[in-house]
Length: 302
Image (cartoon, rainbow, N blue to C red; front, side):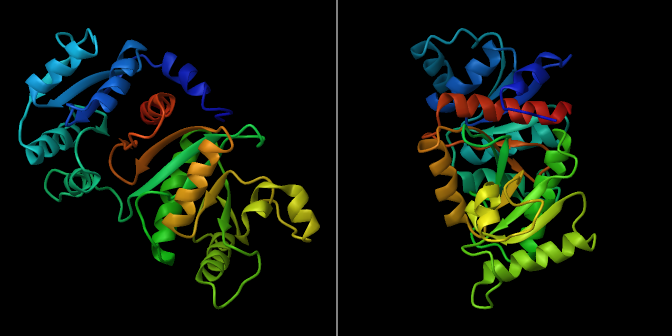
């Protein structure tokens, strides 16, 4: 079982082959910096897709000494960058994908392409893993970036993606807290209805390899003291491995609160495709970008 994000380093050190990362639209100083550091730390073997002259200029400007040592595929048109990058993984010539200087929407259109794309499941979702100083184990969060207002069926897909991934890192039966504003079912609050249905479905084996409880307010999900005060009897409350948020707004706020107020370390990837996708923000720290690359690379090996 993965006990902390830092253990990803040990997992990668044990790999016999470095994983091949494709950086789509590589003429981006922020993304290229992360890829260069991952390369220098022997995490990956990069393939850079983009305007070769732009990539060369950036490498010179930033004193990166790998321009002549890695594969660079010279592509100028953004749509062709996406097609080339995604096709490399589709055809088995690379292992995972990272977003460079291109919009998320354009990259994901390529991922979902029926001819040369990477779609594996109906739902593509974002997964984040945190080390929080105030929590006793790694805590996962989904979905804060892809699905805006997921209905029940979409939440099932989001959960299946996350549960499959968590089992890869040794959490064989993750405890899932389906979050809402309150811990009681309220017919006027859709999040509570969805959470209750997900709990019943897990109890009946319709969602497998996990234990779900909900609705749970955030404090009940992560604090046994809080759940005890409210008389909640649950093996998930206060010991959750995974938080399922009701919508993208709640997830986005919680993600950023963890990082900026709780000093959390984080790694995040996109799940539900045939390969992991690293989709970090320019606002993310370099540590977060490297952790996300590590998480994607390690998940392929596990």
